[in-house]
Figure 1 (cartoon, helix red, strand yellow):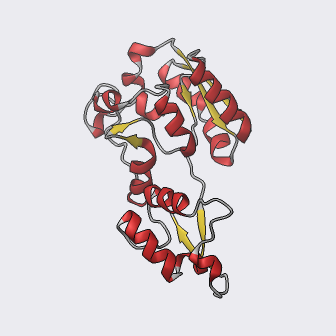
Figure 2 (figure 1 turned 120 degrees about the vertical axis):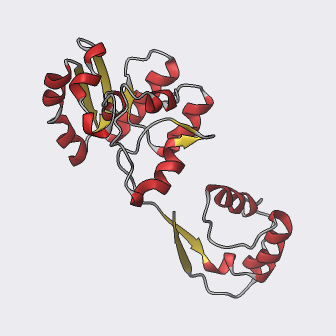
Figure 3 (figure 1 turned 30 degrees about the vertical axis):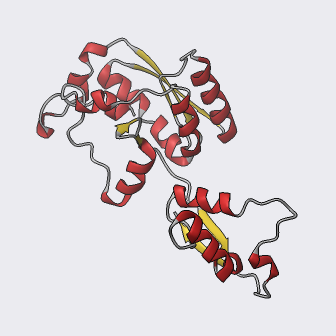
Length: 214
């Protein structure tokens, strides 16, 4: 986030934090982040950044739940104590709905402060686009990630009765989801009252598991 907001003024060869930061010399910014080896390494770069730019950085590292609770409370209250907060992907929807986040497209497009060398690695472009963007607008950068695994019951997803009913309702084949929309459809489809037994519950198939990674 710091690299994005305080980048070089012209071409890639002319990139300079010091030059880009001149209008902001003496400014203080507060950043809330989570304690991990990566963030601890970043914290060691703060003095160098402050020396080069003249910008004071209050870089606060807290535990997992503390970052979620404190950062979310700060944004939802409108207090704005922190200028940048590490958000988990699952928080984005709530923050966007509350209009607690500002898009940074103008900052990215501003050649006087945007680093021309800033380009997400090819390996992370897909998650970058799915997590940091919404409705075509950019709201941040990928900091680090959790790897998530989705486990599905093969006896349910492979049951002929369930597959027929699912396709009739949603228009596509029942299978381990590849998108959040499909995950929502499957969750909705299998959410039933206790008295309503699914075709799969009456089958004799042995319950196994299949795995789909996001």
